[in-house]
Length: 286
Image (cartoon, rainbow, N blue to C red):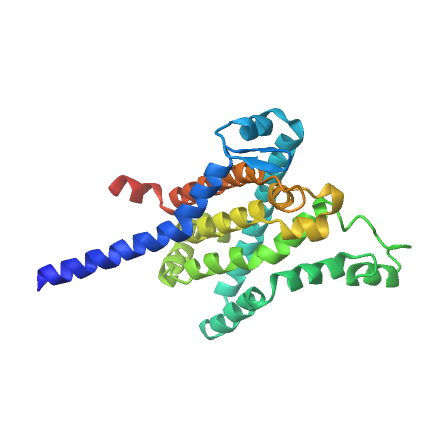
């Protein structure tokens, strides 16, 4: 009986590993292999070469796009983590029976089309959008502001708006697990609201914060659609560059090298987020 159970368990584990290998490891391996090929006369030469990585390292334009993408992702992550904490804490302080409705209100935008959300922000920021129309009607500005679209500022704003639910929900769900008696005990001992936050709430909600920052950074660093639709000529990011190499330029080997670089960045973010999610005392006891 135990032998049959062990055999079935082993078979299920092998199937799970095989599925992960086909769906995740194999595509990554194909990307990695293609990154060592090169293009000649619009044909892929399947010969081992470091030319693509040498081009990435030596070309200042690509280095600039890489640094700009990391800086953009860090900015969006910081802004959304701060705003996510403010919103999540405000939700958490409401009555328990309102929590489900509040979670639903935050999660509903995730059900909408990604493109629709981008165009909604674009219409809000556009020359004839709601923001410019309101400011003009109030007499605050004489003519519409044209710098709100087709630049890195527009990319940053749109990413913050679209990705905000990914910051709010993990933090709020972690706060839900914080025993209210701990907060009450800290307040009874004379702790201020700031002290309660840094000594009780933030340490206990660190796993949710780490997940929020990791998700936001990974999505912001790899997004290509928002830079494409609202970035304009000044909104180039690594994701958009990869999209261009696979599409317009038809340089798959170089696009694969860029994709490998992006995978390394995202995996690094995931590892750092995992370490941040596990408090130091838990790592020492593990």
